[in-house]
Length: 290
Ligand SMILES: NC(=O)c1ccc[n+]([C@@H]2O[C@H](COP(=O)([O-])OP(=O)(O)OC[C@H]3O[C@@H](n4cnc5c(N)ncnc54)[C@H](OP(=O)(O)O)[C@@H]3O)[C@@H](O)[C@H]2O)c1
Image (tube, rainbow, N blue to C red; front, side):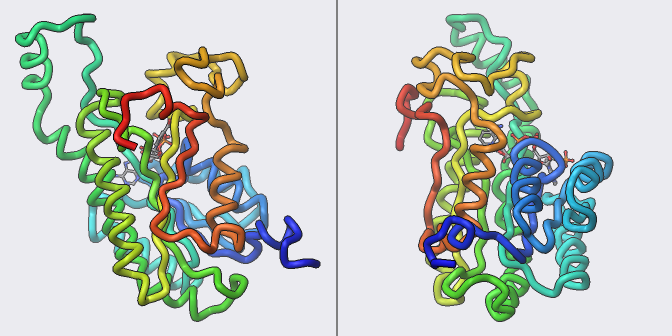
């Protein structure tokens, strides 16, 4: 088969991947895509065992391995690393995808007074703001770092095509560029931090042959986006006006599968320090810093 034939270029055959937040939403879409396309192992991490097991059950036997863990706990992350090490001994990709939306500005009147704004924010515990960073930023960073030796072992294993170096992939968000409130203050700021940390890691880990990239999705159906979608199936073209999402729909399983297969395979091997925006053009109609 020619090196640029699609089955070779986009192959994830034999890859060993960790996906945090793999029990639902975007993480589930990524785990399904990797398992469906020949990954050897996809370890999915989250706090809810039943959600993880449901995903594993829906995939080819034994490929998707549910591991209960909490990315805000260093001990829990270390325990996950040990379990993956004992089972496979190496990883090729770590997708630090777990996320939390945190406090929002929902519930304020259309044109809130200064008193309304102050009251709304001051009624939210500071701990809720900080927890958004604990999951989205600190959890993401420690997850990536905890797997460094197994990522290095992945490079040495040689199970991926030549020049496909091990990699961490974080799920950022277009919220990280959005100067309007969007999901909320801590969420947007945390995603900006995710993007920047990934760029820093890509440089710092370069000499060790480990890459760092991020996804910046727009609107996709999931638990986090459920309040915005308010029960409607946004995946059909025409579900949204073009002045909200130029593609007139949310992203879906195929959009997310395309992104993770590209990033994981030889096709995306030249990406490093990249923030891959998949948003149907939504950033073009937002007030962004992009
Ligand atoms: N959906 C969108 O439109 C959209 C757009 C841009 C970016 N994103 C990002 O995509 C990522 C996935 O979110 P989603 O939209 O798919 O929503 P979701 O279905 O709510 O997924 C969030 C996942 O994170 C896991 N998680 C939360 N806290 C955790 C913790 N402390 N330890 C381990 N896992 C934890 C959850 O599992 P447990 O609750 O079982 O732990 C869950 O599987 C997030 O980073 C989110 O910010 C989503």
